[in-house]
Structures are given as structure tokens and as C-alpha cells.
Length: 352
Image (cartoon, rainbow, N blue to C red; front, side):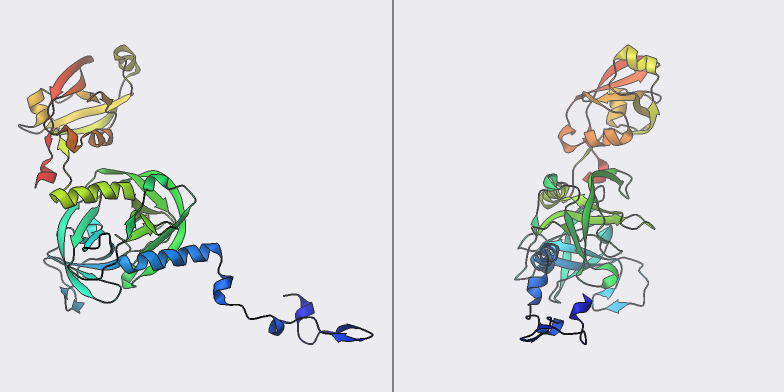
């Protein structure tokens, strides 16, 4: 504040009379809403739109030992989630509810509802629950392909049990990869600096239009501002599969392998697209790989006419569309290029 506006300063005036400069007490009263900037209005809009859809998810596990008793029983894992259909379907992280014997959801209005597991997919760390309650507010899933680095990102969740905690930041990066607890690589991960803490898992990451663009899943400790969310387009696909089948179907070929570089001479000789492949270290009995004639020591370089330069690349190619379909598999065996026919089967992990 300029010193000219402080009480007790010398008066300014003319021969006709003195005039006081305006003070803070002379300013017209301004409503707080008029002082809100565009950023604040955007965050408030997000909270008012999506906040009523955010829930607390509590899971109870066998063998849980804790002094924290509730009407629900002995508390196990606690995380976040959000309602995404008016009839009571809730999205959360798989690691919040995995192997839970009972689950309960607490709504923002305080109602507590028993939740049933519709399905979960540990490979993408997503799960769908169902609750039966009236007057539910559903959040809208947005289009993550439209997300841009630098745009506003708002996270809503229940860190450390503090319900409906709101943090805001920006989208820091797109297209990150993150290793799931199963060991499989999750692609198209959104990185944000909107602060996340334990208990935020499963909560929504929201854009300025009030659309969910991701499901918060992980942070890098002890770093600050390195937080990650599963992109909403992945969420849509996985949620649809979980609702339909209770699982996400994937194919498998039945090998244990490791990434290996290829000699330049072999790459040039055989006209390979990649300079790396998958060295077969083991083969499961009666698996598609064994039936196709794959041997230990082979190096897989192409699967279904696509380069298989790593275990992760091979996993990305093994979708439900390959189940039961004979496909070409190119391997290097003692330096020679061989093309085999392999028929992937449904992964036992998803069939169970």
C-alpha cells in the first residue's frame, strides 16, 4: 500500500479547501466472488462438480490386526474412489481392494454403503465396485487424448483419512510408463504435480471442465511433485471389460525371457527393425510356445509382424484379440531366422 493512503499523512488540498486522499476505509465494499481469479473459479467449479462423486473406500482383509474398530469391522486398507455411473458403479485402484474380504464406501454426505467387487485388473491397478444407494452423483470420464502438458489438474481424495481433500497443479508430462505391482508395465500414464498422499489412491484427477482425466495411483517417494494417474481412456476400456466380464482378458504364450541386444551383423543380415529382442529362458509345459516349437535360447524378434524388442513390448502385443488366433512368430536360433506359427491362449491370470 502506498504511504499516501496511510492514516496520519499530510492532507492535500487547494485554497478552496482540503481534500483527503482515499484510504482503505473509503473504498467501496467488494464481494469476495469478484476477487476470485480465473484459476480459483476453475478449481471451485471442479470441486463443486466432481466433489459429490468422490468416496472413501475401506477394505478389510483376513488376518488384519488393528485397534481401529468401526461399525464395518476391523479396518484394513483405506483409499479413495469415485462414482462414475448413476446406478452406483465406483472406480478405485486395484491395490486398495485386492484380496479384500469386505469393502465399504463412505459418501460425501456421510452415508456408508457396503460395496461388492464387480471386477479388478491388477495389471492396470483398476477396480470397479458396486453400491446400492439412491441419489448418487456420477462424475463424467473425459478424453485423456485431449490432455495437454501444462493444463490445470485437480486431485480430490481422502489422504490419511481427511475426506474430500483438494489439491491442484498442472499436468507435468504425458505418456509416462509405470510398473504395476504385478510387474507388467502400464502405459499412457499422466504425470502431475497436484499433491498426492497415501489415501489418494483411486481418486479422480480432473480437468477445468470437471471431467475426470485420470485415476490417481502412485507417487514417487521421497520426491515432491512426482505423482501419477491412469489415463481416462485406459480407464474406459478397462472398466468396460470389468463390467462385462469381471476381468480384462489378455493372451499369453508361456515363456520366461529377458531383454537382449542383437549383434549388428544379424540385424543387417535379416533386415530386422529393432536391435533388441527377447531371449527365451524357459518355456511352460503345454503352453502355446511349446506347442509352436519355441526352444530355450531362441531370441524372439517379431510377433504378429510387429517388432518384439522387449518383454514389455511383447506384453503390449498380447491382447485379447490374439486369443485362439494363429500368428507368425519370428525367432533367431543359432543366428538363423525362423518363422513359427503360434496360437496364444487366454492368460491364466485373467481367466481365474
